[in-house]
Length: 566
Image (cartoon, rainbow, N blue to C red; front, side):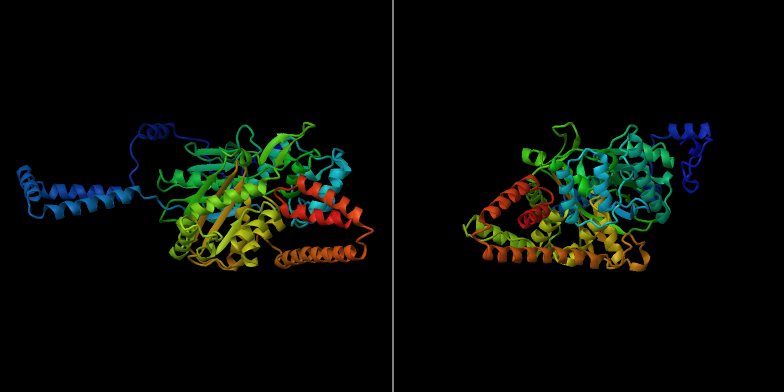
């Protein structure tokens, strides 16, 4: 590492001045308390000064007093007061309204050759570690075959060696690889210099080194000393939108600023080496990934791709069941990992419903809100026994980015929102191509939508993030430009990825149908002779289902079918 100190920062991003003028620094410090006027404020001051200078000889104190008395005691004073109140209300609204927040651009880490994790190596490497039982390896192998992940997902380099390298240095190497791969491209595509960044927000749930991730990025790119940085930790897969929320709030208080948001999760330091099935599932789903997003409140002088329409956060941490549904802990053998509760799907459904209720009132058309209110009145006041009305969010949203937490979660949300295959394709493609990349997954899906070439001016994109706590966060963006496919770098380079996802889903459906038909025929032909064996197999399948009834609900059902075959 000592030999590469000179090359630690790429030359094209080396904007740090080694020699500084002390006098200039002192001048900047001494006058730092003065307000920073923009052009609009300066123009208003000049106009007011000119008006005062022009009329100071005509307007006197007695003239102003006489004018005031005429207004107060005039016959039209009520009308004047009403006009004054209207003007006052307009001024309050103008100065209190939220400033628009824009996305200049965003990038995702696209992976590197030699970092692909195949199911074959996943199983062989787990055997070579020597810490997993054969039952746990068989369990992981079954879940891998039905996880919805391809053979080209990326993993940290330390987990491709024998034995696995999960040291602190390996975790730092993974972090550096991810943030350079995403932030470098962001600076290159936008033309923004690291020295122009005013706010830096980073989120990584389970890896929190000292100095922090923010400090590491600031040191790498030699950002300015006045930058404000915030490091969010332990907030799960929904932390990406919490970073956006924090960044948008920061931009409300400082005009003409840039905010850089970096989202990732470290796989190296959080690999589970135990045999608890509820804690083995993250090993199957989580893979390496990161995203970098550049926000700004500048209206002029910079191009914008998207504008933040609304963002809604929902936190069910007061509920003990929700709080413990995703829990970082040690197992009975002292191995650290993330525990997934069997009640996770219920927690997700409840929190998502609450978040959608808050979001719907802000984005749904009046027709959908009216239908919902009528349905609510019929059920609440007239005691009608009818099903609650589910608003059609497709009438307000054109594109959906649902956190790729697992195939079971995607299936559940697809059913609740009544989405079609086209609308679910970004989420399934992200899970298939990159796995569960935690808080960055919704940006991989965003990149897939752009690469598909169907982003039109005025389209709205809904990002849904789910995370421990339990939290559900939603962000709605409005497209300010139309993005043709030719102007997008391929985040998903395989043209046949859509067909592969279809084939994968068709194979699963065919397997299920064949299994069901074979089971029915076997039951009819051998009903008396196999009665006891079927009961035993059903008991075993129910045990498995109870153990892993969590984030991958779909997988547990398939494992049940698998055990029935045996």
